[in-house]
Amino acid sequence: MASRPGILTEWPWAPLGSFKYLILGPWAVHATYQFLTKGPGERDVGYFLIFPYLLFRMLHNQIWISLSRYRTAKGRKLILDKGIEFEQVDRESNWDDQILLNGILFYVGLKTIPGGAHLPFWRADGVIITALLHAGPVEFLYYWLHRALHHHFLYSRYHSHHHSSIVTEPITSVIHPFAEHIAYFLLFAIPLYTTLVLRTASIVSFSGYIAYIDFMNNMGHCNFEIIPKWLFTIFPPIKYLMYTPSFHSLHHTQFRTNYSLFMPIYDCVYGTMDKSTDATYETSVQKMEESPDVVHLTHLTNPESIYHMRLGFASLASQPQTSKSKWYLWLMWPFTVASVIFTRVCGHSFVLERNSFKQLNLQSWVVPRFNVQYLLKWRKEAINGLIEEAILDADKKGVRVLSLGLLNQGEELNGNGELYIKKHRKLRIKLVDGSSLAVAIVLKSIPKGTSQVLLCGKLNKVASALAKALCQSGVQVCAANENDLEKLKESVDSKFGRNLVHSTSYSPKLWIVGDGLTEEEQSKALPGTIFIPFSQLPPTKIRKDCFYHSTPAMTIPSTFKNMHSCENWLARRVMSAWRIAGIVHALEGWEGHECGGTIFDVEKAWEAALQHGFRPLMIPNAQVAFP
Image 1 (cartoon, rainbow, N blue to C red):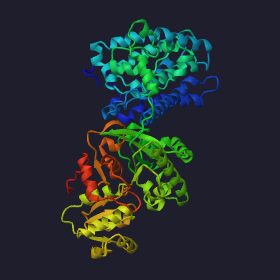
Image 2 (cartoon, one colour; image 1 turned 90 degrees about the vertical axis):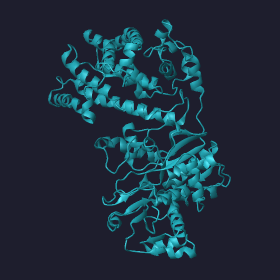
Image 3 (cartoon, helix red, strand yellow; image 1 turned 135 degrees about the horizontal axis):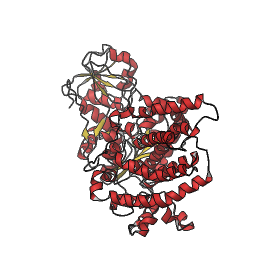
Image 4 (cartoon, rainbow, N blue to C red; image 1 turned 135 degrees about the vertical axis):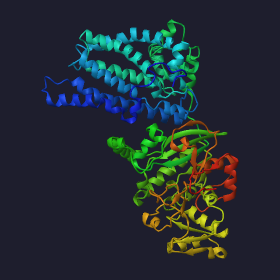
C-alpha cells in the first residue's frame, strides 16, 4: 500500500479474493462457444486465443519467478545481497491482477473498436510500426510519466507502493495501484490502437508486443545480472537500447535516477543516468557463487510439494502443506507430472534457499526424490548415490557441516549416514544427523511428573536414545510391539531394564510416536492422550479428543538475515531440530561426525541451541500446555 493511498488504489475485484478469476468466465465461455459453433470463415481466432494467451502469460511470469529465486539462492551475480521480507511476499501476491485487467480490456476492445475483430495472424508492417512506436512515443512518454510519479504528491499516493520493494523480484515489476496500471495500459495501447486504425494489426504484433513487455519487465526486476558482457562488446550501442537488472536496481535504491522504461537512452539525454550504473553492472557480473558454511540436505515429499517450495508459489510456500490439496492444483496436474518426470531424470541436488546467521552462510539443498521413492528398496542405491554426490560436492566447496534431512539419514538407507564416512575416510566436512538435539527437544516437551509413556511407531536412532534417557530418569517406557521391545533393550542398560516393559493396554496418557502410527493404534488411546512425535513426519490424522505436539523443532532467532526464502518454517520462524543441529555444530566448532551410532551429549546440544538463541516451540492449546 502507498504511504498515503489515493483514489483508485484498490483493485475493483479485491473483495472477490481467489474467486476474482470468475470475472473472465463469461468472456472465455463466449469466445469458446463462438469458435466451436461458427464456420471456418466466421471464427474470430484472435478473440478465442485471448484466454489461452492470458494463461501463457501467467506461466511465463511463474517461470521467471522460479528462475529468479533459484539464482538468488545460489548467490551468483547478485546485485543486492539482501533478503526479501514477508511483507513484500504478501504485497506482491496479487501480481496476476494486471493480467486479469489486460484480459478484460482486450475482450472489450476487440469487440468494440473498429478493426479489432478477425485480425490476421501476421503482418510485417504492423510489427515494424509497433516496434517504432514503442521506441519513440511509448518510451519517451513513459520516461516523463515515471518522473511525474516520483513527484511527492503522486509518489506518496501511488508509486511508493512499487518502491516499497527495495530488493526486487520479477513480479515486482507489475506491483502497482490500480490507477497506475490504467495509466500504463493507456501508454502501451498506443502501438496497439495505432495499428488497428491503420489496419496493420495482427495476432503476432499484439501477442508479441505484450510478451516483449512481460519479458523485459521480468528480466529488469531480477536481483541478479543476466545480460552478458560480450553482448555490449559486440554491439556497444545496445547499452542505450536495452536496460539491465543492475540498471533498474539502482532506480529502486537511488530513486531519482534511471527512470527509463526499457531503453536507457532517455536517461542519457536528460541527464538522469546514475553515475554508478557501469560500476554496478561490472560488480554484479563478477560476483561469484557463494560458498556456504553449513548445508542442510533435504528432499521432496509428495509431487505437489514442488508448489510449496520457494521456487513454486509464494502463496503456498508460506502455508503448511496439508493432506488436502488446493482445488486449483488439480488443474496443474500436467505440470505436476512433468515435474515428477524431471526429478526422475535429474541427477543432482539443487540449491533451494540461502540464509545467514551470525558468521555463517547457510544453504538448503534438495535431493530431487519424493518420499515414496525412499520406500522402494530398488531405488536405495540410486538415492544413496545422489546423497553421496551432494556430500562430496559440499566437501569440495569447503562446507564445514552438512546436516541430513530425515529420510536422507534412514538407517536402512545408509545407516544414519555412516555409509559415507566409512566410504570416504578423508572427508573434511562433518556429517550431522541431529539426533542429540531431536532427543533433547522431545525430552524437554514431556511434562514434569510423567511416570509412564508409550513408545510406538517405526523405531530409529532417536527412539532408542529416548528410551534409554527415559528409563535412566525413572520413567517407565511401554512398547506395544514385542519386536520393538527387544530392539529397545539393546540400547538400554540392564540396570534400567525394569523400566522398559511390554504393554498392550495403550493406557499411558502420553505417547511418543514416530512414522507408521496407524489410525487403529490411535483409536486405542484414551481421551486426552498427548502425542509427542520424535519424527519430522507426523501422522496424517490425529483424534479430536487427543492433543498433538509439533514435530521436533525450535523457533529461530530474529538475527537470521538474508532470508532468501518464503517457506512456511520461516514464516513462523520455525526450523526442524535436524537442521538446527547442523548450525549449532558449526557455531560451536565441534569436531567429529554425529551419524551412524554416534550421538552427542543431549544436554550439551540443548544448552548450545539455547545459547545461540533457539527456543522451544510452544504450541498454544486451551486444554493442555507444554513446558
